[in-house]
Image (cartoon, rainbow, N blue to C red; front, side, top):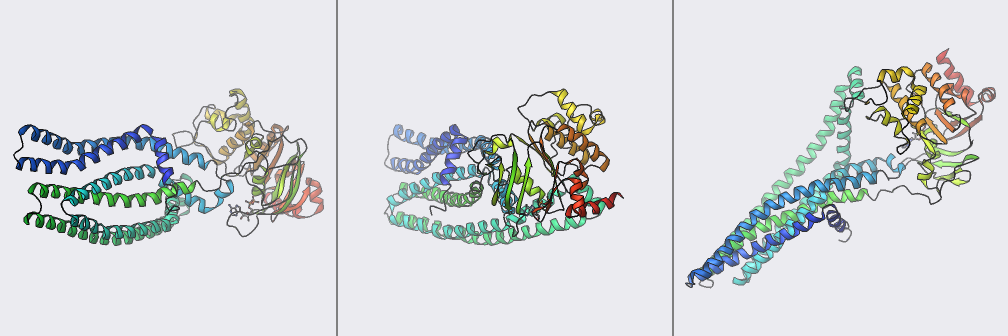
Length: 582
Ligand code: ADP
């Protein structure tokens, strides 16, 4: 039980933190509303009994005014409730959304490679702001439960049988609702991968590149069919569950109404037998009606709470994904070398090592190129080099400082990375570049110079300066794949780092531009230690050292001429690729 509701405290505490004033106002309002509802049948009985006993007009008038006040209270409380919950919703959205986004930024990067993490993220997103629904349902459930208890007490004053029959009617409804809840939760869990698949396929139709490709290549209909299939599974499952739930729900309502009729019958019998007065019968009737309305709302809310709780649970479960473990040791800029010592690494859920005993050295100021065929482990190694992933076995040492022990933020400050799957930020060109040094000086002339070096004078002229908005998402100027890549390279160079790592930096460029950029690039990074990852060996002539990777480890290390003469893996790849340009 404790495990089942382990996040309950978090929900209320988070709601309180998100909207403290509204939280208190809602609770006060609920208390007033409940008090008025419980008083109402008691006042009615009093009025009828006073009238029957021929009480004076003054005291009867007061009772009638109080009774009227109670009747008016409910709609006023209801409309205030709605307004307050709406305001709380806006505040909650910001609070819960920020919490989720902030946590996503801290997740262990390796965990992001696991599809289960993505499923969890999908479910957490759906659960975002469900805390507010839970809070609302809890408030309504509590209010209605207290009202029910009050009504049972009032009914019990006239006959204990009424308490018994009143409570009995609830049992079948509760049992059925428990069953519904179980079904809904298991269905949601089962559907999470299908939902994500639907979302992914749908997303392809709003991705310009994908739309162009599917149209030209003629596989648009195939993808529509695939989306349709995934969607059909979802619809079928929802339909089955919904039908089953509705059928059983009807049965529950029928049973509840039978007990309602039974209660009225018992009260009527008591009055006819002269055991209770007409006033008491009227109070009983009023209490039945309130009891019937409140117990239905209370049960519905309790079960909605359970349902919402499971959704909310998914939100809080997301926060159990491992976050980046950070070392305590402050990074001292390395003076001599970075060493990989027999490094092994395996992706979550994978059965094979992506790095299987990788060992090499990168000396300070060296320009290293890592080459190897696709899948040989180059990108994985670059991620371990930056400390983004930690080795499963072995170590990456910066002058003896292991990435496992280092405070990651300190290390990151000294490293710049241009990833293979660089992001096309739909911001201004200036922002696209300055992102890598957000707090740094905004020397526009220096930034223009950097862009001219990487992308050429014509590029800047064509765009009309660095303030141009890029990307079509917000009506900016679209760039070609190669141009976006140049912007990403400029971003990497803009960061004041002593190490720069570029993963396939020229994959979107044509060979002539590639040569031009690389020559410029070597000039620009003269004072840094650089690691370029590429499956094209053409890049290697500029390198101080070439590391050739194969099957997750080093196959050869050396200079261009030396490796060609050795006639090994490098020479083989060189010969293969030379054929393209022959
Ligand atoms: P390269 O950069 O040389 O092409 P990678 O480092 O990308 O090679 O991949 C090395 C190996 O790790 C490959 O076998 C690849 O299939 C595997 N791999 C890469 N990324 C993942 C991932 N996210 N999950 C599981 N395996 C992966």
